[in-house]
Image 1 (cartoon, each protein chain N blue to C red):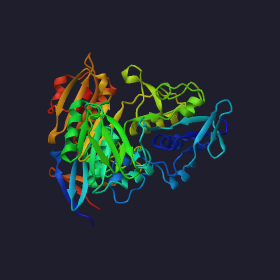
Image 2: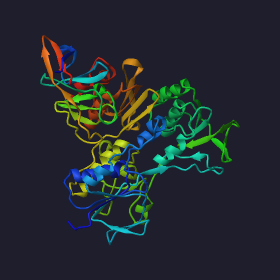
Image 3: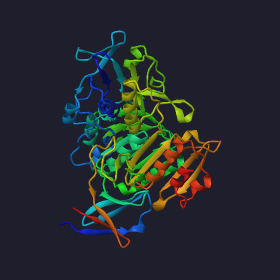
Image 4: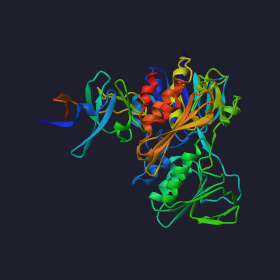
Length: 104
Length: 410
């Protein structure tokens, strides 16, 4: 069974924004959607391994800061050139004001 | 539609993306990509960066053999198109064969501008292809001296790569500063200083009077009399569009193959896209431009594919460009020469953005530089503001406390 790991406080991320979270040698991106839900994906773009947390969140899309590759951060789906490989997503829950992610 | 299908001349970023886009859009006829290189379609930006410094240089393919096969894209490698027979809808190839087309896309790109001087030899080289990059890389090692002729992006990125590999580097630029074309002086200054800090000898305002290349060493005599002796001279003085094929076919050339805002030439069955074409840019009142940029190649490839299928969609993108040198990334959205005033926004870690405003207060471009991806998000938001033709208050643009996203909603 995978453990739930505390990533940040719920208030650490603005609505429609993203934050980087590093844990045990891995890097993740934690998102807060415009409708105040939280999501998590792998932290690096599948095109050139760039930290997605430096990118722009618009609605349910995260755009890579380097070459504008786009993913739906809720599903991990790649949304067009130059990215073609989907992003891995992780379960997220908010408990007592903390954002927890389940790292598989 | 007739059965000949779609032919794309040029298998770079633009042609490769166009071929994939035709399939994404559901086109089921034949798609043929013709490229004069022996490689799969690949991305060129790494050639002056990662391909230079990585342990095992390899192409960054846009589509591998498997994907090309799966999408039924025929890729004719190491073949040039030599003529277009417009009435017959046929393209002649250098291997003697010919291809019929219903719609033809010219994605022939650009090639390095040649230095018009005598004395150039085997140690004076240009960078365009992966094979060029491999040949250059072989000389980038400790103990070797590399002279870079031209302080443009390719030359400067190569200079950074050469330093990373331990070579001694001299950059020679005839103009009074580097990056004269399209980059504000304040940002060029940051890049200039970064190169000096990394040990590059930067010689600006220095024309070259003579070149002597004996096949082992190149001696560059500068106008002021100084001599630079190098193991390799890399010439990066700009690029010119590859237009001969179009010109010989009687198509209009105007700093590139002239197309309309739908990327169509005056021949309704021939389109052109990417570095090789000039097109009217809607956000600047239809000003005709030609862009040498990766994202433009990608976007126009995709748009050309749509319009080859009859979409009739106008190009509406904002030009966007980036460069990486050492730990710095520069990003530019829009064309800064459209602006008459600038507003500076300072970000963390020494990063900053210059917003370029037109005389009537419109945001027309944004140029940013900083470590890593420090400017990326704000440049992307600026790009969206530029596309909206917004006129944000200069005080808001200049204050880091005001989120650019909040201006977008206005």
